[in-house]
Length: 151
Ligand SMILES: [Mg+2]
Image (cartoon, rainbow, N blue to C red; front, top):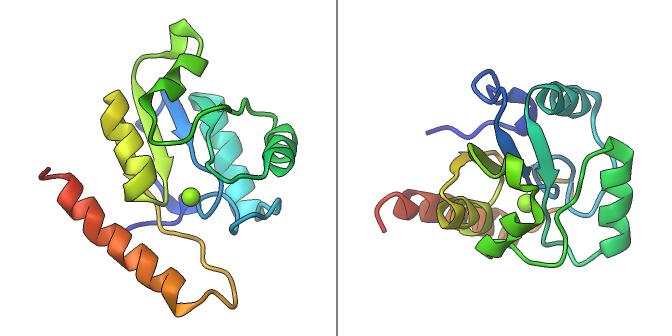
């Protein structure tokens, strides 16, 4: 299945659902604060339909908080994906109909599996100068995503 960038995914089925949304490589280039207009628009469309919680493993607490403030969305902190206890940070009334959106099957996909959520696997946002190793990593991650359906 062809992966789509976040701005191109279909969110029509996500009304009323709780979405755990990855930041790096999904919404912005790795470690960045810059949302393109297309992604910002998609994010506000998503946030107007669903309950969106950001979750990132990026060890940059200040940047993560700044990003969450910038887009005015709550950030799940204190645990790393794919730890299922991450959903303990979500208020009880939103803990159903979970969907995880992210660019790493090995992290976001496993989180989805661990908490019984649907997984929307997005294409990774590459940046100029990304190494062959980065491309290899995301290729292997796609392979993992296929395995994840069977294991
Ligand atoms: Mg990511």
